Amino acid sequence: MSTPAAPVEGLRDRRRRETSIEICAAALDLFEQKGVAGTTVDEIAARAGVSPRTFFRLAGTKEDAVFIDDERFVAALQGLGAAGDDIPALMTGLRAVFARELQNLDADPRARERYLRVRRLIAHEPGLLGAAIRREVTSSDRFIPEIAERIGRTDLEVRTAAGVAGLEMRTTLDEWARRVDRGESASLVDLHREVQARLAEAVGPASA
Image (cartoon, rainbow, N blue to C red; front, side, top):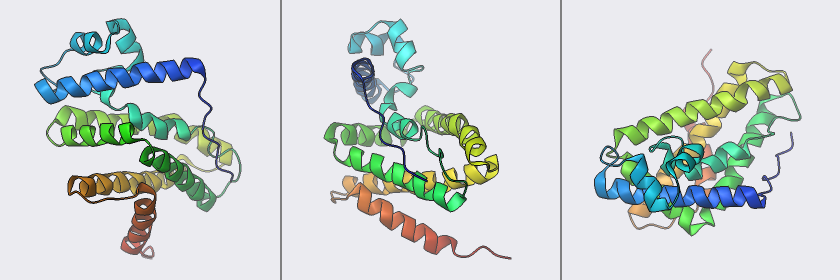
């Protein structure tokens, strides 16, 4: 299975992303100052310099507004599974996609800082944790049936592979954030490889 190339971003997409980043920055500032419950959509829109209508079109909810960087992982999965019908090949493709996007995140200082701020907020804002879980389930439902049909495997097989690859990615991001908070330097790409090795050791062979 070939790994899909990163999507090419056109001018319209770039402007949309830039506006989404401004909305995210405004939401993060306000959430840190007032909390999620104490912040309104109108306040976020006003600080970002957009209308409430534009806010809802680009962000959806105030909680979703801070997860702009998660979209890189969802978008990168488009087209995965276009070739091949074997689960090991699917796992290889999933891991390659996540590794590429982790490398892109590692090379983007502003995105790294946004991610760290979101993680710190999630630690004491249950609404954000709920939004993160909901977004992950929704994004999986968007691409798993399509991939399963294209490669001729069951939804369960594809969902399991995606779940393992997603766990590796989330564990990598969480461990990276912990190390950064402790003042340690950490490469996302190197950590991703380490996490894969550690999970393989932890799982071991399936019981009969």
